[in-house]
Every structure is written in C-alpha cells, then in structure tokens.
Length: 294
Image 1 (cartoon, rainbow, N blue to C red):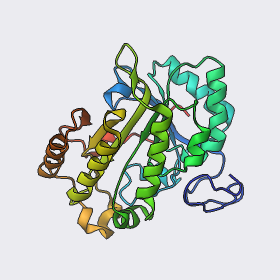
Image 2: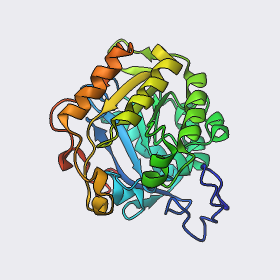
Image 3: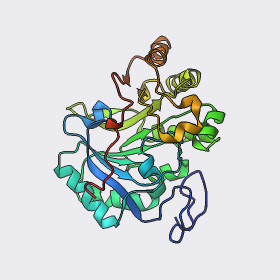
Image 4: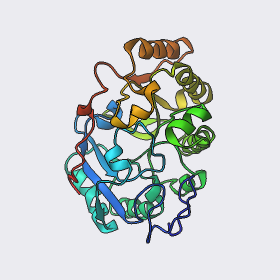
C-alpha cells in the first residue's frame, strides 16, 4: 500500500506520506461500527448486521449517500488490534455477520485481521460490501476469508461510469470482479434462520432517467449468473447538494421508473430479487457517522 496499487485506480500513492484517490492513509480509518438493520433481510435479520464503515472510497461517485465518509472527511484512525476487537464486540451485540463496508482500499492490511479473527474462533460470516470496482488479483487473495460478497453493479454504460464515478472502465472491471466473486462462492447457502452464510448478492441502484442502462444491468446479471447470485434492485437514490452540477439526476427515482424496472426484471425471468418499497430515498436511511463503536 506504499506505494498503493490495491485498487483499479493504480494511483501509486505512498499512503504513509500522502493521500491517494481514496483520500485516506494506509492506517485503518473507521467511521462507525454498530448493528445495522437496513441491509437485505438475509443479512440484517432481527438482530442486525455488524457493520464496520471504513472511511474513504476508490470510486467517489458524485451521488454518494455516504459522502461524509467516502472522501475521508470523518472517521477515527485505529490499529489492527482495535479492529480485531471490534469484530468480537459486534458478535457479542448479536450481529448476524461482520459487514465490511467500502473495505477495498484496506484489503492487504484487512485480510490478516480477518484471518486472526477466524483463527480465534469468530465463526460469523464476513461480508465484503463494496462498489464493485475491484482488482481480480486482490480478490483472489481474499478467497477462503470472505464468506459473502455484496458488490454494487452500478452501470453497463462506460459514459455513465465516466460522468458519475470518474471510471470509464467500471463496467468491464466490475464484470471481471463479479466473475471472480462468483467463482469463489459458486452458490448461495443459508443457515437455518434464513441468514445467508455464503454467497453473492449484487446490488443495483437505479439512477433517475436511466432506465435503459438499469435494464441492461439486470439483463446482464440474470443472463450471466441466473440463480447463482441474489439480486437486490434498489430505488433509494438520494439527491445531495453535489448534484447541482448534474441536473439530469438531481431528483429521486419516480415510482413509475422503478415499477418499470421491476416489471422488466420479471418479464425476462427474474423470479427472486430483493426490492424496495415505500420512501427509501430519505436521509433517515443514512447512518450517523459519529465514530460509534470505534
């Protein structure tokens, strides 16, 4: 990580001395470690998902809901030993899993901590909750340590990826990363309480006015992986102040748009998927990043 070529940005920054694209040093910077009840039902269940929100991000999407932490503006620097203890504290609180949120840019330092936790008897599944912009070679090092992959698949259009995530190569990079995740997990396996033990859940959050690309994403995922993965089709796009410069998406997804996407998914043969109902595009669904549990 010094210089850092951990993610597809390959910025080569010496993170011991400076900040790279992810905007955080090579030490763990964590903004929240607490039970989270707003993940997919097979992750949150009744007792919550034990989420660890890492600061920084290798994508920097203009519409990021967690922008306070994704650009490294909040969070506490902690040691690997403290992170190890946090995992067990979440277990004691009743967590169904250990959910690592935006961990990509810490992966080389993170894997030994996960290994140590497993060696010390932590049997909860580890969830790799990411934006989908991953290096295949990095993911290969995680094989056997990550139990559940929870990537986004944001776009199939390179032009959309370039405009909103500054990553024109996102579609092809995400395709390769997802293929590796599915290779490692092959199929979803559940515990007796309907909690996911191993597998891949792919999230797609619909963008306003971009039904065509969302249809393309759902088609690709369904035709390529079928029932090997779980789909989570989301409507919770939340406008932020940053979107003044992007007026074409500076609004919520309409009910008509989202219903059209769900109807399309059904029409091409998607039989099981998580969908969102009611008012999900609201600040109340964004956690309080106040270093709780850190």
